[in-house]
Image 1 (cartoon, chains in turn brown, cyan):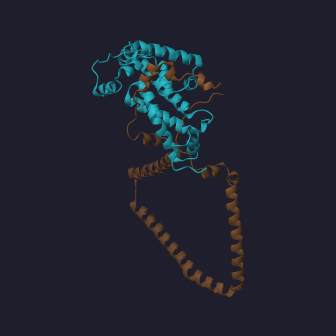
Image 2 (spheres, one colour):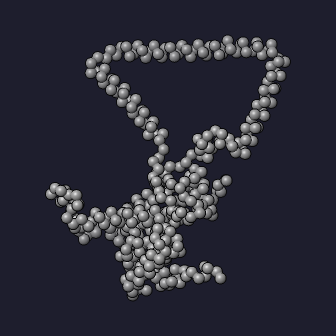
Image 3 (cartoon, rainbow over the protein chains, first blue to last red):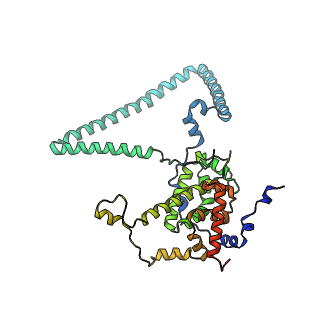
Amino acid sequence: MNYETLTPTPEQEDPELHRLLVSLPSYMPSAGFEDRVLSRVYRPAPAWVRALRRGPSRAFDTRKVRWWIGGMVASSAVASIVLAIVATTHWMQLETTWSTFSKGIILGAWRDAIAITSDVIVFAARTVAQWNLTGPDAVAFGIGGLMVVSLSAWGLHHTMRQFYLEKVAPNARP
Amino acid sequence: MKIPADLTNSTDQEVVAWAREGSERAYRELVQRYQRPVFSLVYRMVRDREKAEDLSQETFVKVLNALDSYRPEYKFSSWIFKIANNAAIDHLRRKELDTLSLDGAPDAVTAERREGTSLQLADNAETPLEELEARELGGQIEEAIATLRPEYRACILLRHVEGYPYEDIAQTLDLPLGTVKTYIHRARAELRDLLGPIT
């Protein structure tokens, strides 16, 4: 015997009252409810990020990731062999090219970077030296500096922290 | 598992699993599925649109932030209705405490504190918002439901409006099965008395 047929439906239990109650309208919250809820919900990071957080050994412990790593290792090995063959057969030509490249471009860029950094540091030091802060100005400057550092640290902490998770008793019975 | 383009045909358990994976679409789907029944239940319990919206929002935030503690072998709807019902009952209890203090709060030791916490008899005239709410929930049936005890109200709404079996209501409201049957029986009797001419 089917158990369902033995259990009366709400309609069978009290048809008239049921007819009245099911005719009641259902209400909707105001527009934007969904967005308001979601703005307060902490959504978990994507699966691969959470896997990385759990630990690198477990993160790579999937069939797909193993195939990817295997493919990368194999292609890197092939590329290295090809490079080694090219390097040994064209050694003189490569040496000349590298010498021109390193002297003309890399060395020049490095010198420019050093010069720009030195100029910025010297300019900043001279500017600060010209301020000649004394007494209350120096105190105000110090407090202002501390506030900037504190507010930056607080802002960073506030931005990076996770949404506070409220504990909810699970619906499940043991 | 790949998330389908249309989630409307997926089960609650599937949608929850995708939400746990971080899918925003899955979160939205859960809100869309339950915002109407949850809000309707809470609104009928507290009879204040603004408060009902706050409590519904709290319910969804609690549920969605605790999806990891949800056990898929149980109904998601039971879980969300349970939290919504608890929120509404807590609000009604707090409201009752606030309004029944005729002589001020029990801890009021000074005259100012007693005066500040004593019962202020409300003006009978309704504000425009209250009038609107009264009109919206103004049908005789709604009025009759509003006179029921909150526990009866939740039981009868879940049984007749949401079509829940007794076992699910018992699980949702954390009540013994016999108590649920008694509550529904009494609620029906009270409603029949109140709605006599209609039924």
